Image (cartoon, rainbow, N blue to C red; front, side):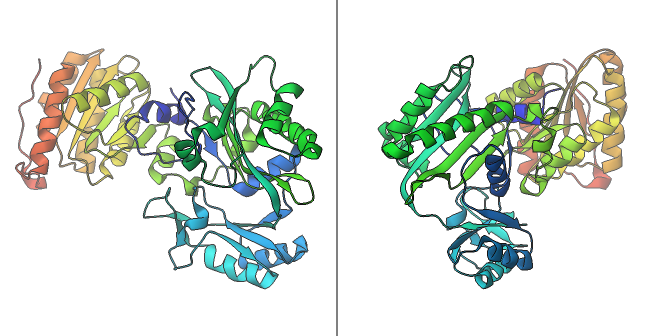
Length: 450
């Protein structure tokens, strides 16, 4: 069974991104999308473990803790940052009216005041959508003054099948804007996975960024340590913005965004214990807990499929016939009645869904067992929308007969094109309000087998 993150990469052609993605998108840099994101304070802790310079700071989960953290930092010049997994926090707004998820503060009292207004409230940014994301903690750190600010990221590039270092002398700003308006300001360094980031490569990157002569060696060491994290922790993204040279000539990572390969969760248990599911789509989390791979999309035809490749083909043929898939859902090889029921609950929780296309190849699980589970689910959930079922494989004839004899609004069709056409047609009919879906008046629909 494919991991959820890998299926997210496959489904990216259809999906609105749900998870934080690398800030910079460059021509020729084909980045991975399967990644666990962690909060900034955890990224800072990881940097400290590897001996990388970061401003002094700590996390707080209550207003009282925030006041105590500010006292421990021991300076009157600090920054408080809402811990929400989304970009644009500084320009965001909370649901209680507070402007800005990143604020400069000058005392423990201010730390307590702003923490009280941030924690337990949703922050709305350009990446969260109108609903925003809940802030459950704040990160308070000393405010350091930078002489120079740079951008540096280490990413996996699918095109070259290896890591790349993306760097720019224009750090501390929206790197997407830099990539669009001045692409020449961004440099890409391809790394040979066998040799890694050598002294020569790291020193060259540091020099081209514009570090002063007295900081080049420290910057070189920082770049090499970042690459070490990238390798040892199965990262897909390490983004430092800004990577700064301070007024007292320290090389510091002022802000960090980390992403880790979901397929490495079995060997990165410490990292994955940091996952904050409150920052993820609740339905995708629920699906993963049930062993399903589910990604909500923007269409209206629900898809229930076993196998990632078949799921992609199903979405493709729906679009080719003028429809829009409402989700990517791979129930895997074990399409049991329980899995089918959970899948239908996820699909039908989306009010936009007007038809469901079930496209399953019965190999490990027989088609007649799938058909029985499908009928039980329709009855249990009292589903009132049309279902198109294409069941192929072991005992498919028996499955067709079971569906035909059910008297439910299930169309059993073995031809993929015909099934896709029917799903799009019925979806349009339902949206036009021409199909009577009242529970007590569900008509017996003659199934089609081609």
